[in-house]
Amino acid sequence: MQEISSYNFRGKRALVRVDFNVPIDKGTLKVIDDTRIKAASTTIRHILDSGGSVVLISHLGRPKGSLNKRFSLKNILKSVSDVLGVEVHFTDDCIGDEAFKISSKLKPGQVLLLENVRYYKEETIGAESFAEALSKHGDVFVNDAFGTAHRAHASTTVIAKHFPNAKMFGFLIKGEIENVDRLLNSEEKPSTAIVGGAKVSSKIIIIERLIDIVDNLIVGGGMAYTFVKSAGGKVGNSLVEEDYIETAKKIRLLAKRKGVKLYIPIDSVIADSFKNEANIAETMIDKIPDGWMGLDVGPKTIKECSKIISKSRLILWNGPMGVFEMDNFKHGTLGVANAIVSATSKGSFSLVGGGDSVAAINKFGLSHKVSYVSTGGGAMLEYLEGKELPGIKAIKS
Ligand code: AMP
Image (cartoon, rainbow, N blue to C red; front, side, top):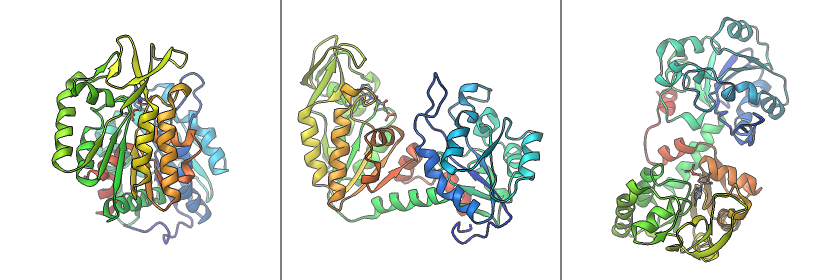
């Protein structure tokens, strides 16, 4: 494994696996949030400024091996150019003749963006031949896609073996690893994790692991209602995963056994339909009338969470507290964000990770006021869980 900051890129074509899986507006097909592009720009600019050229590989969405315009990386071409401040070339088949023709003629300072690698089903199954074909685009491989480091895909993992003496992490992955390690290895106390988002089912493993790591665990967002129902509360039409009611009960017991304080929201902002203009009221979270649904945590919960967060030395936040995309239901998420910002300003270490928390903190313009914003969603969570990520192992081994 080489080190990006000391590697000599002069005259080399660097094949850089980035995570440009950015949110795209379904109507206009424009980029809604370019955080991930900006996050990878340090690595790309470093290579260009060091006299190299860059071939960018990424996926976008889940086209499942078929051509679907909605998932074309052409949709993000302008954003990539704008962020990098250079013209970016594009090819509409990542391993087509045209793509190899352009990549072989790249001059120092030039950038080529390849079409979505997931247009080939070979990407996600980690096909050897596909990885080998992609590897022909570069002299050196740089993996800067932390967001997909937990997948053993062709362009994230299998490809690395074609660069035994020229493979390395980009600055983004290095930063992710260093910051998550800081959270895991710090002795500072108390530590608090705030886990929100839509569903218990997608966060269950991380919640179980966090119980081993933190002192306080705050549960918010849609998944809180499964916890409330599991304790016999009335949640009306709120989002509930019936299959996870038993799991929620087990998590309560596990937290108790391990001495972790588990905080479930006390009150809720409820609506009579899933829209910003719905009729809105506030209730205790376990007394939601039929026909109403909880779309945000209420003021009492915000106050309690803020108190816990303000006393925490280490803070991890994944997942919004409510439907923050709608203005009337953003206050819980904003309250948590403000509390984290305030704790950070007093010297606490805060890590915000997971796609929607990142979108939320960006929306509120607060991302520069927390210690670190991870762009690595599921991969960051798996790394926190202690798993060895295939994309990281492939570079290290
Ligand atoms: P996740 O990707 O699991 O972190 O979920 C994020 C999504 O959860 C966001 O789009 C939120 O709008 C949604 N969400 C948060 N709170 C609720 C809620 N109370 N009911 C329904 N969806 C919610």
